[in-house]
Structures are given as C-alpha cells and as structure tokens.
Image (cartoon, rainbow over the protein chains, first blue to last red):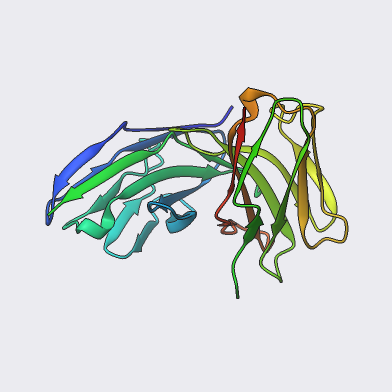
Length: 111
Length: 115
C-alpha cells in the first residue's frame, strides 16, 4: 500500500538558518504530493502541493520539488523564523480521495 | 468562507459510553473526509463522502464506528461502546471534487479522551 516516510524530529534551528525536511514516498502510479503544517493549537493547513513530476510547490518561502526518480518531496526554506515553529506533515493523494500522511516532523526555531 | 468547523472541540467520556461528533464542511464542498490522529503520528484516513454517499471506509473503522452525511452537508461520526484505544484527535476535512488533486481543508479537530 501507499506510504510516506519523513525524517523524525524534533529539528531545532536558530532563526535565519536553512531548513530541510526529507520526505520519501511509496505509491503506484502518479500521486499528488502535499506538505501540510500544524501550528501549535491550530488545525492542519495546506502549505504547498505538486501534482506531477518536476513540479515545484512554493508558499511562504517554503519550496518542495516532486522528484519521481527518487520518489521524494523534500521541504526547504532558506531562512526560518520563530513563527515557523510547527509540525510539518508530508502527504500523498492517489485516486483523488484519501490522503496518506507521514508521521510528522516537529520544527522548533529559537531566536 | 468560514472554514471547516467541528464540535465539540473536546470530549471526555467513560469507557463504554457512546459519543457523537459533528463536522460542518465549507459550504460549496461536495466531499467530506474523516481522519484520526493519535499523539505523535500523522492523520489516518477513516472514511469519506461524496455528497451524501459514503464511498470508502478504512479497515480502521470498526463496526463500533458509524458516519453519516444525511443531506450532503454536515456529517456526524458516532463511536459506540468507546474503548480507551479510541482516544485520539478526530479530524474532518472537505474538498470540492474537480476531478484533479483537490486540496482538502481541515477543521480544528475533536479531541476524544476515553477514561
């Protein structure tokens, strides 16, 4: 079945540091890929998505490129802020209905 | 657009009791999903509706769980004879089916604690 693996956290960074969160997936066919973010005390929010190979999703300074050859969708941000402290979830969508999520990566940015 | 809402936000119950949660999706969305999230894990799919039809159910959804979407608008998720293992965050999401990779918008969740 479909699965998503992402690096375990917590990831602790200083403000303005570079952030990478690795995400790899296993799925047949051509899934769409998503990053969702969960800020403390809030619900899941879509951060970005990519629907086909080599697509790059971007939002709020975050980027991720759909790499079919490596089945990956790594999330990057060049300069993090304290407000980026959250839990980040990688997910895939195949068949248009259910999302399959990774286990989440907690990111803590210190001033 | 008021977003997806869920009620109650928190529910504490004793083992063996029945509980019911409600989800109100974004008004023009015809798809509605239920997920369960346990502490430190990602959400897991439970079931989804296209309008009022329940189209898929996960094997996680035991016969103690039932979901309805009677008029294709709000949905309810009922858990009968709750067990301590049912303690989790129950998430609802909705989307508009455009035939592609539709974005699912999530509600704040209902946190269930079974004592």
